[in-house]
Image (cartoon, rainbow, N blue to C red; front, side, top):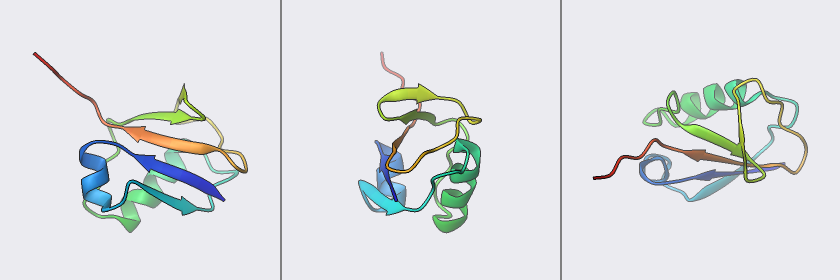
Length: 77
Protein backbone atom coordinates (compact mmCIF):
# COMPACT_ATOMS: atom_id res chain seq x y z
CA UNK A 1 0.00 0.00 0.00
CA UNK A 2 1.08 3.55 -0.62
CA UNK A 3 0.26 6.85 1.04
CA UNK A 4 -0.63 9.58 -1.46
CA UNK A 5 -0.40 13.19 -0.26
CA UNK A 6 -2.15 16.17 -1.84
CA UNK A 7 -1.21 19.81 -1.34
CA UNK A 8 -2.96 23.16 -1.82
CA UNK A 9 -5.97 23.09 -4.18
CA UNK A 10 -5.41 19.40 -4.96
CA UNK A 11 -6.27 18.63 -1.34
CA UNK A 12 -9.52 20.56 -1.75
CA UNK A 13 -10.36 18.76 -5.00
CA UNK A 14 -9.81 15.31 -3.46
CA UNK A 15 -11.43 16.26 -0.16
CA UNK A 16 -8.63 14.60 1.82
CA UNK A 17 -5.07 15.49 2.79
CA UNK A 18 -4.00 11.94 1.97
CA UNK A 19 -5.31 8.61 0.76
CA UNK A 20 -3.96 5.05 0.97
CA UNK A 21 -4.08 3.02 -2.24
CA UNK A 22 -2.24 0.13 -3.86
CA UNK A 23 0.09 1.66 -6.45
CA UNK A 24 3.36 -0.27 -6.18
CA UNK A 25 4.69 -1.32 -9.58
CA UNK A 26 2.90 1.55 -11.34
CA UNK A 27 4.61 4.53 -12.89
CA UNK A 28 3.83 8.02 -11.65
CA UNK A 29 1.96 8.62 -14.93
CA UNK A 30 -0.23 5.55 -14.34
CA UNK A 31 -0.96 6.68 -10.78
CA UNK A 32 -1.89 10.18 -11.99
CA UNK A 33 -4.32 8.66 -14.49
CA UNK A 34 -5.88 6.43 -11.82
CA UNK A 35 -6.38 9.36 -9.44
CA UNK A 36 -7.83 11.60 -12.16
CA UNK A 37 -10.33 8.86 -13.08
CA UNK A 38 -11.33 8.37 -9.43
CA UNK A 39 -11.47 12.08 -8.52
CA UNK A 40 -12.84 13.82 -11.60
CA UNK A 41 -12.19 17.34 -10.26
CA UNK A 42 -8.44 16.65 -9.92
CA UNK A 43 -6.03 17.69 -12.67
CA UNK A 44 -2.49 16.44 -12.09
CA UNK A 45 -1.12 17.37 -15.51
CA UNK A 46 1.07 20.21 -14.20
CA UNK A 47 1.57 18.92 -10.66
CA UNK A 48 5.07 18.11 -9.48
CA UNK A 49 5.49 14.66 -7.97
CA UNK A 50 7.71 13.57 -5.12
CA UNK A 51 8.36 10.01 -4.00
CA UNK A 52 9.69 9.75 -0.45
CA UNK A 53 10.39 13.50 -0.44
CA UNK A 54 12.46 13.48 -3.66
CA UNK A 55 11.13 14.86 -6.92
CA UNK A 56 10.21 12.18 -9.45
CA UNK A 57 9.41 12.04 -13.17
CA UNK A 58 6.30 10.50 -14.70
CA UNK A 59 8.37 7.45 -15.68
CA UNK A 60 9.48 6.70 -12.10
CA UNK A 61 8.15 3.37 -10.75
CA UNK A 62 6.46 3.38 -7.34
CA UNK A 63 7.56 0.70 -4.86
CA UNK A 64 5.81 -0.91 -1.90
CA UNK A 65 5.60 1.50 1.02
CA UNK A 66 6.56 4.62 -0.96
CA UNK A 67 4.89 7.89 -0.06
CA UNK A 68 3.89 9.88 -3.13
CA UNK A 69 3.11 13.60 -2.97
CA UNK A 70 1.45 15.76 -5.61
CA UNK A 71 2.35 19.43 -5.45
CA UNK A 72 0.61 21.93 -7.73
CA UNK A 73 2.54 24.76 -9.34
CA UNK A 74 2.62 27.89 -7.21
CA UNK A 75 3.17 31.52 -8.01
CA UNK A 76 3.84 34.47 -5.83
CA UNK A 77 4.48 38.09 -6.06
